[in-house]
Length: 160
Figure 1 (spheres, rainbow, N blue to C red):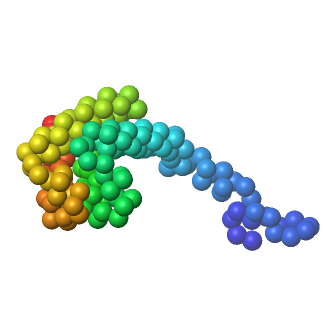
Figure 2 (cartoon, helix red, strand yellow; figure 1 turned 30 degrees about the vertical axis):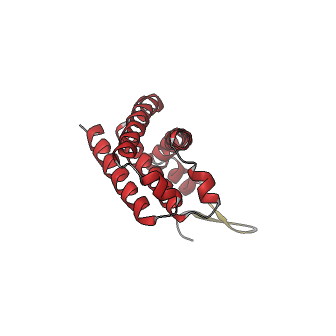
Figure 3 (cartoon, rainbow, N blue to C red; figure 1 turned 135 degrees about the horizontal axis):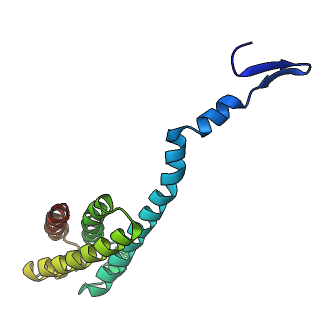
């Protein structure tokens, strides 16, 4: 028979050596070492995103979650923009950080800066909260555009 198989009295039996060779390969060992780290980094970043979204929802002059539950599409669009706007700099922070500690430090700094930028956008674009509460999609799209623009600029600033 071919390599990796042995013939015994009861039939063909696979030789375990190819499997152990694969499991001992540098690629599999790198995965086994790196995967738990990846999961930890992902968990920390997602926790930062969730915390930032909750803080944003508490700081906004309107109650987006309640409006979304009532079927207000403009509020849903605006809050989706907030989530993506928070995620962009957090993703860059994740990509430039080498440890959970780095992710926490840069992630918190990023969230604070992004929440401040969002508040400035909210103050500059006066009247939008009322228009979003009334379900005006165009107001939500403008707000999303402004928040995503600040997110991209902050993300670029993180990379130096």
